[in-house]
Length: 351
Image (cartoon, rainbow, N blue to C red; front, top):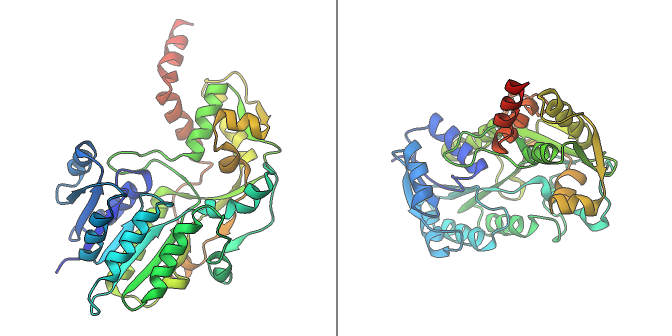
């Protein structure tokens, strides 16, 4: 019998790339994907003729529960904060017969580590606190309830604790993700592309406050390889993967300071001829919010972690280019999306 894999979020950036990685490695898997409508379904179907499509939304609890019941493995990449979907997937997997445990691989995010800066309202300053998923696993899985993503993380963790022989859970927690995706629809990330976008719109670099905040980062292809390794571990029943209370996996490959990245983005935008100088302007919290409501959190708060578990247990080895090396492509892509490339070319031709 082929492995039955149910995937959500396949037209999104994370889920689309993860699906690509898994199907390339295992075309023999019997894959079912949740899609919202026929337009989204056509995009998935054009890339994956063998994939079975189920139409619905994350609010369709009965559909999600039924598909989870039929699946061996559920890869949930659609929404880190959707309680209805999380509960439905857990319920469906817990209804498996005793001889066939179900696996749930849920996507959270290191935004969960922003809670202290969000509470204090102080943005742009560095924090020395670094979380890890090995020695510090209990601290990571017992963060306060007001931390972003924490409510759904708790639903997943509780599901795995309720009957660990029947439901095995893992939470994948990616940081800043960069690189072009390979999925059937959205292939764009958010934090770095948005930084490039607003640098081009404002015609200067931007940073929040002093620009000293840290985030960790990972290339989308490296992230997808971690999903693949977890899926394979579930299929093979590998004892080296941890599930349940210790099944929490950060997926970072490096760390950056947002102010430094802002300088590199501005420098590259200037180099490509889209802005007049490589100046970086410091924005207050309110100025940043007017530009982009979530700007203080995604560029001005700290999210620092170390991905030890995936390296130790799954032998995960990130190999893609660094976030700094990806900046020229990110700037060019945002310039194209804003229609600046054609305008710049015409300007050069007329000079």
